[in-house]
Image (cartoon, rainbow, N blue to C red; front, top):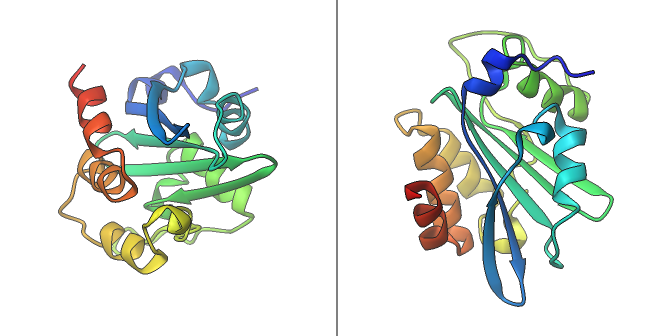
Length: 162
């Protein structure tokens, strides 16, 4: 049973699946039923084709982002702000998946997870860290930049405009 409340689901700005199939990026909306936790997201991502796996890009409450990438049995995650974990069940599922304990210091937000989650697609861990350190960017802007660097920026912009 999920700890994610209806209020938390309503606070999700958007949840997108991106996957590369036959050299073409495809995007789809991540269904609400898959937003219970990291395991549910990973199960949903495994439904999509592509050798690079599928990637979930989730923006929550104009505050933080979650990336989940499933490649077969390998599940990699990244939470842009670990201090969100005590207040948000989905963020908590990320730190639980990682097996880390988060000390909450509202002044010291930091990412948790795999900064190299997209390194094979052109976004290095250093560049990801730099992007997440720009606290002036809204989650939508962070994810748009990730999409641009990885190669599906136009598709991402179109998806959000629909």
